[in-house]
Image (spheres, rainbow, N blue to C red):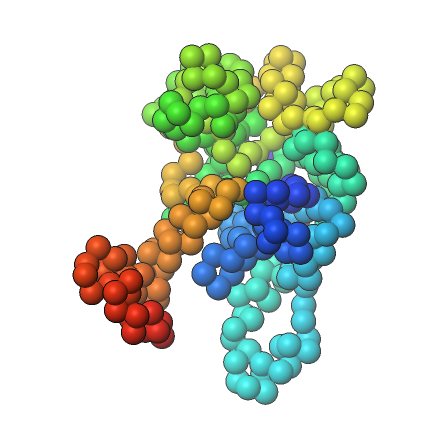
Length: 306
């Protein structure tokens, strides 16, 4: 089984980040010196993906611009002997083919995937939601691809979440536990009340799905005209047609940057893990609780060189 293609739904309005997202897509929020979408695409490339289909809307053109070559800028940086600053993004651009699909109406995650169906064909494909950033030794998507190849099934990423968070996620019911981190899924309940949740295993933004997901979405479009198409419903429909779906606890650090507080945590967390910035941010945090912190000693606020 080859998994060479990924769909990245990025057409959302980003209302939680208004007014910022009025002009700049929330997918381009910075994490250190790179936008969030950079990390998503980089994870896909490191997982062996060769073709990316990004589902966007008319206000997301800067995503396309970011993953395009900039000869003028490269030439200017070369004159300054700083061309290495673009080395990483240039490598990504050359490593993968990009297709852009426009979602004209906000009709749900399932609809966004359905729009990209012609780029996938009869293959398994990955789905990566840009709200979830995963830092791991083995890329998160690659972990799912490994399971999908081994078991010849669709796979969704899951994370164990506390009771108070259950109503914010799709929660799986476990048909059978195969290993400590691998589960055969019975069904998925979207955003249940905690008393109705079948487990504490929440679906997060990484999937490897059979092309049969598009058949399920086709069925849904025939009776839900004008309504949102939910990916969870399509996966449940696929399982009702005897398509096996497994869930895998992805190993690594996952940040949900879909809300401002989640994004702030991701900025701090990723900075702490960075070799260059980590020591400086750690000292800053350690200093916060002291009487000599920047709150009382404003001169410390300008000590920001690395």
